Image: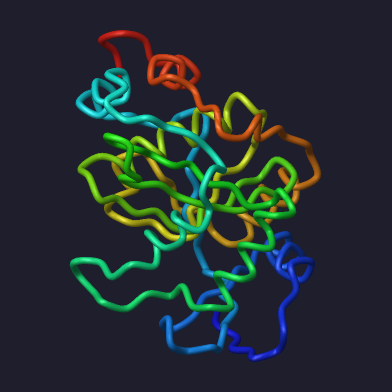
Length: 224
């Protein structure tokens, strides 16, 4: 379901929309209009059954990348808004940037940032509300960087007591991690429970080592 609007949206309105199972998007970077989206089926990552492929687990454990959180929101959203190989369009316009920047300042938007040789190689950002986390977008400049960010995200969510990890849609990229399609009415029940509870994102900047992240997911050496 789409509902287009040019009405000014405040951070408080945005959080209330998330609590109702709705999120905003734009057609492209040059279109100032925002539309509300409420999918019939929602992508959800099961936090207790998150799957990490064996090769990726080795990459995470190697600490090839430095992973931190909440250090550079602007750089992450720039990366997410950059043209992709399959399209030059992006749904992140100026209003989206401003809104999520305001949520970041309020502590309701977080980043996971992946650095390689001192440069930002990939990352993701999303919204935190109660014990629910809503993934918004991810990007990578170096192979596996966004996947490593996702592994560290889920590890942090599990350690912090989160109950729901919403991916909005199911994609081929996310399917390898065990994302599930949940009907709208089921999702709303899960959402209601999650936002009524409290979770802890944890201290900014410092992130887990690869071994710590995998341990938080119940993955030991040589196992998936």
